Image (tube, rainbow, N blue to C red; front, side, top):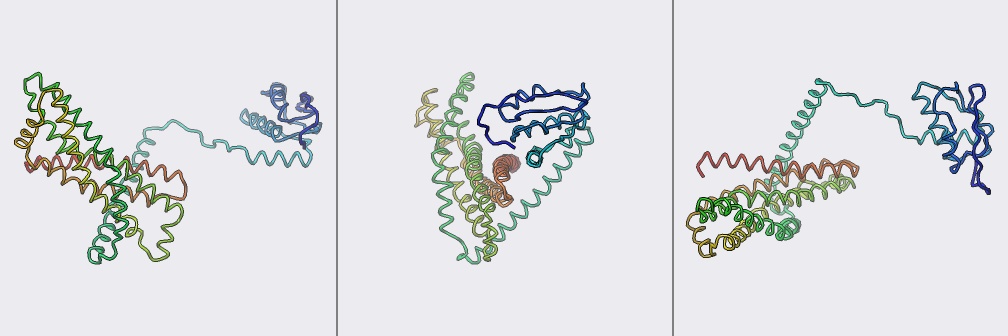
Length: 377
């Protein structure tokens, strides 16, 4: 065993005698590279063992070199034994060997068609189980809300107000800016197309129907899903990792009542308000761009908007808002409750929460569009 030598280490002498690879000198970190180049990489000389009895000093790097050479030989079907080690050297070699990364015992093989079908089948089963769990979690939240309606004193009003501020007030700037820019883009693109037919004035109808009926509330919900839905998962998941939720249950407190219901209620209250702000901002942006690009004055824009836009276009968007809010809140809190005890699951489920919430919002929006088209609204 070596500790730092007082003099500069000399190169290790490497020789092969009678099928034995013999090392002599100091096998230290500053001589390992030269020793590695000197040691034979193949069994051309019939090497069957490594003799280190003549090594005067050896450190961790030297032990690693011996084990690495032994493992490389094993990959070629050659068994190398390390002989002549002192008790200290043998202990060091065993310690380093235990610290070596495990070899891949199951190399990746090309997937067959059956393997792919099996993989898809497992994904379908996992999706089915998650759907059942989500519906069950939704039922639990609705039952808890029913209990709170019967006993309003159970509602944590302070928590609801706090989450209203975090979800709604703090999100106003980004929602308003997003909707304003969407209105500008719609007016600019619409004017470029309608000008070809001399129907520039219909850009008002295009902006109003698109923003009030679809884009205003849909894009607002997507922003809220990415902003607040991920925050729900991260906050509840962090509490799950620190076992705070288990502590609540031990104290007889219901985590759904304390953590989930205030967030869902705050989201259902604030998303329609954010949708209204998005509608107003989008119309203002569209009006400004219409004035600049087409010469449609604000007075004409307002008159056309009031005259030709049915109030149901605005109503359709507001009807969707509570449903989108419920979807985002349930998915965000559910994924937070599924977090395990490691940070990897927290990051993975936070990402999954955002993706699933946005996907479900778009799916439900499509279902609403079909429904309102069928009923003629």
